[in-house]
Amino acid sequence: MWAAEGTALPEVAGGPPRPGFALLPTAGTQDDLALEQRLLDQAAEGGAFAAVWECHPALVVPPTYRRFERFEALCERSAAEGWPVAVRRSGGGLVPQGPGMVNLSLAWRTPARLSDAMEPVYLGLCALLQHAFDGFGVQARAQAVEGSFCDGRFNLALDGRKAVGTAQYWKRISATEHVVLAHACVLVEADLALLVHRANAFEARLGSDKQYSVDAVANLADCASAAPTAPALSACSFSQRLAQAAAQAPLPC
Image (cartoon, rainbow, N blue to C red; front, side):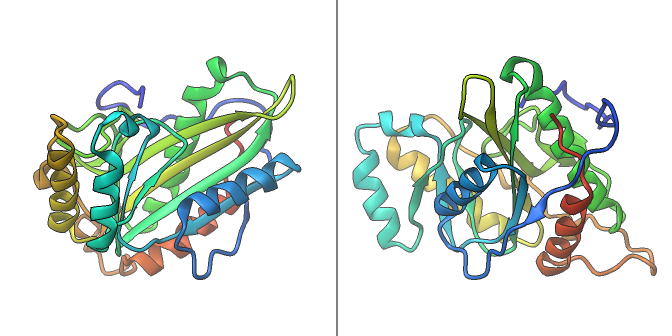
Protein backbone atom coordinates (compact mmCIF):
# COMPACT_ATOMS: atom_id res chain seq x y z
CA MET A 1 0.00 0.00 0.00
CA TRP A 2 3.03 2.29 -0.01
CA ALA A 3 5.15 1.11 -2.95
CA ALA A 4 5.82 3.48 -5.79
CA GLU A 5 3.84 2.60 -8.89
CA GLY A 6 5.65 0.04 -11.00
CA THR A 7 7.98 -0.91 -8.15
CA ALA A 8 10.12 -3.96 -8.88
CA LEU A 9 10.24 -6.45 -6.04
CA PRO A 10 13.60 -6.23 -4.26
CA GLU A 11 15.28 -8.89 -2.21
CA VAL A 12 14.32 -8.79 1.46
CA ALA A 13 17.30 -7.26 3.22
CA GLY A 14 19.08 -7.99 6.40
CA GLY A 15 21.16 -10.62 8.14
CA PRO A 16 21.15 -14.41 8.05
CA PRO A 17 18.04 -16.35 6.99
CA ARG A 18 15.42 -16.92 9.67
CA PRO A 19 13.08 -19.91 9.92
CA GLY A 20 10.01 -19.98 7.69
CA PHE A 21 6.38 -20.21 8.71
CA ALA A 22 4.69 -23.29 10.14
CA LEU A 23 1.48 -24.08 8.28
CA LEU A 24 -1.74 -24.22 10.29
CA PRO A 25 -4.43 -26.67 9.15
CA THR A 26 -7.39 -24.85 7.61
CA ALA A 27 -9.69 -27.68 6.51
CA GLY A 28 -13.28 -26.46 6.44
CA THR A 29 -12.30 -22.82 7.10
CA GLN A 30 -15.18 -20.44 6.47
CA ASP A 31 -14.71 -17.71 9.07
CA ASP A 32 -11.66 -15.68 8.13
CA LEU A 33 -11.82 -13.56 11.28
CA ALA A 34 -11.73 -16.65 13.50
CA LEU A 35 -8.73 -17.90 11.53
CA GLU A 36 -6.96 -14.57 11.96
CA GLN A 37 -7.54 -14.79 15.72
CA ARG A 38 -6.04 -18.29 15.78
CA LEU A 39 -2.95 -17.00 14.01
CA LEU A 40 -2.60 -14.03 16.35
CA ASP A 41 -2.97 -16.24 19.42
CA GLN A 42 -0.46 -18.81 18.14
CA ALA A 43 2.10 -16.17 17.20
CA ALA A 44 1.74 -14.39 20.55
CA GLU A 45 2.91 -17.61 22.23
CA GLY A 46 6.01 -17.66 20.01
CA GLY A 47 6.84 -18.89 16.53
CA ALA A 48 5.74 -17.91 13.05
CA PHE A 49 2.61 -19.34 11.46
CA ALA A 50 0.94 -19.34 8.05
CA ALA A 51 -2.48 -20.28 6.72
CA VAL A 52 -3.38 -20.81 3.07
CA TRP A 53 -7.13 -20.93 2.59
CA GLU A 54 -10.24 -20.19 0.56
CA CYS A 55 -13.57 -19.00 1.89
CA HIS A 56 -17.18 -19.01 0.76
CA PRO A 57 -18.63 -15.92 -0.97
CA ALA A 58 -18.36 -12.90 1.33
CA LEU A 59 -17.66 -9.19 1.41
CA VAL A 60 -14.81 -8.21 3.72
CA VAL A 61 -14.61 -4.57 4.80
CA PRO A 62 -12.44 -2.47 7.17
CA PRO A 63 -13.89 -0.97 10.37
CA THR A 64 -14.36 2.42 8.66
CA TYR A 65 -17.40 1.05 6.79
CA ARG A 66 -19.35 1.10 10.05
CA ARG A 67 -19.63 4.85 9.61
CA PHE A 68 -22.35 4.44 6.98
CA GLU A 69 -25.82 4.84 8.45
CA ARG A 70 -27.25 1.90 6.49
CA PHE A 71 -24.31 -0.45 7.12
CA GLU A 72 -25.95 -2.86 9.60
CA ALA A 73 -29.17 -3.14 7.56
CA LEU A 74 -27.21 -3.77 4.37
CA CYS A 75 -25.12 -6.43 6.09
CA GLU A 76 -28.33 -8.32 6.87
CA ARG A 77 -29.54 -7.94 3.29
CA SER A 78 -26.23 -9.08 1.84
CA ALA A 79 -26.13 -12.12 4.12
CA ALA A 80 -29.65 -13.06 3.03
CA GLU A 81 -28.42 -12.95 -0.57
CA GLY A 82 -25.60 -15.36 0.24
CA TRP A 83 -22.84 -12.75 0.64
CA PRO A 84 -22.25 -12.20 4.38
CA VAL A 85 -20.21 -9.17 5.40
CA ALA A 86 -17.17 -9.49 7.68
CA VAL A 87 -15.35 -6.56 9.31
CA ARG A 88 -11.62 -7.25 9.33
CA ARG A 89 -8.95 -5.76 11.59
CA SER A 90 -6.79 -4.11 8.92
CA GLY A 91 -7.54 -0.97 6.93
CA GLY A 92 -8.03 -0.48 3.21
CA GLY A 93 -11.30 -1.02 1.38
CA LEU A 94 -13.92 -3.60 0.48
CA VAL A 95 -12.71 -7.00 -0.77
CA PRO A 96 -15.15 -9.52 -2.28
CA GLN A 97 -14.22 -13.13 -1.57
CA GLY A 98 -15.32 -16.24 -3.43
CA PRO A 99 -14.29 -19.52 -5.07
CA GLY A 100 -11.10 -19.33 -7.09
CA MET A 101 -9.46 -16.88 -4.69
CA VAL A 102 -6.58 -18.03 -2.47
CA ASN A 103 -5.73 -16.26 0.79
CA LEU A 104 -2.39 -16.24 2.57
CA SER A 105 -2.21 -15.10 6.20
CA LEU A 106 1.08 -14.86 8.12
CA ALA A 107 1.58 -14.09 11.80
CA TRP A 108 4.71 -13.76 13.90
CA ARG A 109 6.04 -12.02 16.99
CA THR A 110 8.60 -9.25 16.61
CA PRO A 111 10.42 -6.53 18.60
CA ALA A 112 10.47 -4.35 15.47
CA ARG A 113 8.72 -0.98 15.44
CA LEU A 114 5.78 -0.38 13.14
CA SER A 115 7.31 2.82 11.78
CA ASP A 116 10.48 0.94 10.75
CA ALA A 117 9.03 -2.35 9.60
CA MET A 118 5.74 -1.71 7.80
CA GLU A 119 7.38 -1.37 4.39
CA PRO A 120 9.73 -4.38 4.88
CA VAL A 121 6.68 -6.46 5.84
CA TYR A 122 4.99 -5.59 2.55
CA LEU A 123 8.18 -6.22 0.59
CA GLY A 124 8.68 -9.58 2.29
CA LEU A 125 5.09 -10.61 1.59
CA CYS A 126 5.41 -9.59 -2.07
CA ALA A 127 8.71 -11.47 -2.42
CA LEU A 128 7.11 -14.63 -0.95
CA LEU A 129 4.23 -14.38 -3.41
CA GLN A 130 6.52 -13.82 -6.38
CA HIS A 131 8.49 -16.91 -5.35
CA ALA A 132 5.25 -18.88 -5.57
CA PHE A 133 4.42 -17.29 -8.95
CA ASP A 134 7.80 -18.21 -10.44
CA GLY A 135 6.91 -21.90 -10.75
CA PHE A 136 4.01 -20.99 -13.03
CA GLY A 137 5.87 -18.52 -15.23
CA VAL A 138 4.05 -15.51 -13.77
CA GLN A 139 5.79 -12.17 -13.21
CA ALA A 140 4.05 -9.49 -11.11
CA ARG A 141 4.85 -5.93 -10.12
CA ALA A 142 3.88 -3.91 -7.07
CA GLN A 143 1.70 -0.97 -8.10
CA ALA A 144 -1.57 0.82 -7.55
CA VAL A 145 -4.33 -0.06 -10.03
CA GLU A 146 -7.06 2.52 -10.48
CA GLY A 147 -10.52 0.96 -10.49
CA SER A 148 -9.57 -2.16 -8.51
CA PHE A 149 -11.22 -2.98 -5.20
CA CYS A 150 -9.15 -2.22 -2.09
CA ASP A 151 -6.52 -0.52 -4.21
CA GLY A 152 -3.08 -0.03 -2.69
CA ARG A 153 0.49 0.62 -3.70
CA PHE A 154 1.48 -2.91 -2.63
CA ASN A 155 -0.99 -4.64 -4.91
CA LEU A 156 0.66 -7.16 -7.20
CA ALA A 157 -0.37 -6.56 -10.79
CA LEU A 158 -0.12 -8.52 -14.02
CA ASP A 159 0.23 -6.28 -17.07
CA GLY A 160 -1.28 -3.41 -15.09
CA ARG A 161 -4.26 -5.39 -13.72
CA LYS A 162 -4.51 -6.22 -10.03
CA ALA A 163 -4.21 -9.90 -9.14
CA VAL A 164 -3.21 -9.63 -5.46
CA GLY A 165 -4.21 -7.34 -2.61
CA THR A 166 -2.11 -7.08 0.55
CA ALA A 167 -2.70 -5.79 4.07
CA GLN A 168 -1.17 -5.92 7.53
CA TYR A 169 -2.24 -5.47 11.14
CA TRP A 170 -0.06 -4.95 14.22
CA LYS A 171 -1.13 -5.90 17.73
CA ARG A 172 0.95 -4.86 20.75
CA ILE A 173 1.46 -7.74 23.19
CA SER A 174 4.05 -6.21 25.53
CA ALA A 175 6.00 -3.03 26.09
CA THR A 176 8.58 -4.13 23.52
CA GLU A 177 6.85 -6.55 21.14
CA HIS A 178 4.04 -6.83 18.61
CA VAL A 179 2.39 -9.62 16.72
CA VAL A 180 2.22 -8.86 13.01
CA LEU A 181 -0.55 -10.25 10.83
CA ALA A 182 0.21 -9.94 7.10
CA HIS A 183 -2.35 -10.98 4.53
CA ALA A 184 -2.62 -11.46 0.77
CA CYS A 185 -5.72 -12.20 -1.29
CA VAL A 186 -4.90 -13.76 -4.68
CA LEU A 187 -7.20 -13.94 -7.70
CA VAL A 188 -6.39 -17.30 -9.27
CA GLU A 189 -9.44 -18.51 -11.21
CA ALA A 190 -12.23 -16.41 -9.74
CA ASP A 191 -15.41 -15.14 -11.38
CA LEU A 192 -14.15 -11.58 -11.75
CA ALA A 193 -17.37 -10.16 -13.18
CA LEU A 194 -19.39 -11.54 -10.27
CA LEU A 195 -16.95 -10.25 -7.65
CA VAL A 196 -16.93 -6.75 -9.12
CA HIS A 197 -20.72 -6.77 -9.47
CA ARG A 198 -21.25 -7.74 -5.82
CA ALA A 199 -18.72 -5.16 -4.62
CA ASN A 200 -20.28 -2.39 -6.73
CA ALA A 201 -23.81 -3.28 -5.61
CA PHE A 202 -22.83 -3.09 -1.93
CA GLU A 203 -21.02 0.23 -2.36
CA ALA A 204 -23.98 1.70 -4.25
CA ARG A 205 -26.46 0.61 -1.59
CA LEU A 206 -24.25 2.17 1.08
CA GLY A 207 -24.21 5.44 -0.82
CA SER A 208 -20.43 5.50 -1.09
CA ASP A 209 -18.68 7.00 -4.10
CA LYS A 210 -16.63 3.86 -4.86
CA GLN A 211 -17.15 1.76 -7.96
CA TYR A 212 -14.83 -0.87 -9.45
CA SER A 213 -14.00 -2.08 -12.95
CA VAL A 214 -13.62 -5.68 -14.07
CA ASP A 215 -10.93 -4.43 -16.47
CA ALA A 216 -8.78 -3.48 -13.46
CA VAL A 217 -8.42 -7.04 -12.12
CA ALA A 218 -6.94 -10.27 -13.46
CA ASN A 219 -6.71 -13.95 -12.61
CA LEU A 220 -3.31 -15.63 -12.32
CA ALA A 221 -4.58 -18.58 -14.35
CA ASP A 222 -5.16 -16.31 -17.36
CA CYS A 223 -1.60 -15.00 -17.21
CA ALA A 224 0.35 -18.18 -16.49
CA SER A 225 3.05 -19.32 -18.87
CA ALA A 226 1.90 -21.42 -21.81
CA ALA A 227 5.29 -23.20 -21.91
CA PRO A 228 4.99 -27.00 -22.04
CA THR A 229 7.09 -27.33 -18.88
CA ALA A 230 4.89 -24.98 -16.82
CA PRO A 231 2.45 -26.81 -14.51
CA ALA A 232 -1.27 -26.15 -14.80
CA LEU A 233 -2.30 -23.25 -12.57
CA SER A 234 -5.44 -23.72 -10.49
CA ALA A 235 -6.53 -22.59 -7.04
CA CYS A 236 -5.50 -26.01 -5.71
CA SER A 237 -2.06 -26.15 -7.35
CA PHE A 238 -1.32 -22.55 -6.43
CA SER A 239 -2.35 -23.14 -2.79
CA GLN A 240 0.14 -26.01 -2.59
CA ARG A 241 2.93 -23.94 -4.09
CA LEU A 242 2.13 -20.99 -1.83
CA ALA A 243 2.29 -23.20 1.26
CA GLN A 244 5.74 -24.41 0.18
CA ALA A 245 6.92 -20.85 -0.38
CA ALA A 246 5.70 -19.78 3.08
CA ALA A 247 7.57 -22.66 4.71
CA GLN A 248 10.81 -21.42 3.12
CA ALA A 249 10.31 -17.68 3.55
CA PRO A 250 12.34 -15.61 6.04
CA LEU A 251 10.51 -13.41 8.51
CA PRO A 252 10.40 -9.84 7.15
CA CYS A 253 11.20 -8.30 10.54
